[in-house]
Image (cartoon, rainbow, N blue to C red):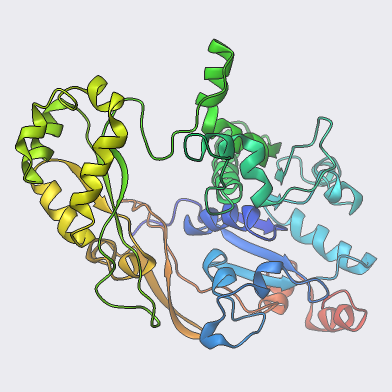
Length: 413
C-alpha cells in the first residue's frame, strides 16, 4: 500500500482553539506528523469544553478537543522562559511547516517569526491564520468565531423578511479558515517541491469568511442595494425551505423533539409532481401556483398548504413520499440521525479508536477517500504533553539527561 500523501512532512503546530487545529487536523488526516505545542500553564480552551466523557471534567476528556486533534502528538513547552523558547525554535527548525493562529506579530515577539526562522531554514513554510491578517488597520485585533459571522456579512444575509440579522448557529469562521489554511499549506508544499523555496502565508480568517458570501457584495456593487433577507426561501425555486413535521415519535431525555423536512422544488414540472404526491394534483395547474412567478407571488399561501401536509406526517414519511415523486426532499437531521445513519456508517465516515483516558469513542473522520494514497484517522487525540519526551529525543536529539534538566528548569511543563 502506498504511503499517505503527506508522509514525511512534519508540522510544528502552535495553533489553538478551533481554526488553527482544524487546519492541522486536515494535514494530519493526510499523513503529516503534526506535533502540537501546548503548555500546562495556559491550557487550550478546548480542553475545558464540553461535552466531557462520562460527564467527568479533565483536560484529556473533552470531546471537542479529542475530535479536532486526532492524529497529533502533544508536547508541553513553557514559552514564557528562554529555555522553552529555545526548545520551540529547535522544533520549528526540525519541521517543514510551522502553523499558528495567534494575533499578528505574536510569533515575531516570541522570536519564532518567519524572517527569523528562514535565516536558519530557507525552505521553511509558515502560516499565520490571524483574525484579520498581518497588514491593515485591524491587524492587531484578536478575533473570535462568533464575531466572524456578523463581520463577514453572513448574518446580514441570514434571517426572515422584515426581521433582524441572525447568527448561523455556530462559529462558521473557524473551520472555514482552517480548511482554507490547509489548502494554502498544500499549495506552498507543492511550490517547494518544484522550486525548493519556502514561503510565508498570511491568512485572514475574516477574508476567508467574506469570500464565501461574495454574492451579497456583488449585489450591492451592481445595484447599490442591500440584499433582502428571505429566510429559507430562494430566488429561483418555490416552494423552497424547511417545513414543520410531527414531533419525533420517541422522546429524548424526556423531551419531545420537533422535526422538519427540507423541500426544494426546482421547476414547474417538479411542482406538478409534488402536488400529485401530496394528494392535491389540482394545485399543479392552479393559476396561483402553476408557474414559478405565480408561486413566488403567492408564496405565503403556498407554504401554508405545504406545511398543512408535512405537519400531519413524520419527517421520514414526508421525505420518502416526496423523493419517490422525484422532488428534492430530506429530513433536517438531528445529531441522533447522523450518528445512526446507515450511509455515513456504511462509508466508514465515523471512526472508533481507543483513547488512553476515555476509552473507545466515535468521532468523524475525513470526508474523502483516496484510492492510491490512504488518509484517515490512525491515532486518537493525545493526552496533554504525552509525547514530550519522545519528540525531544527522537525529533530534536536531546538526551534523557538534557530533557530532565530542561524539565527541572521549567522549560517543559
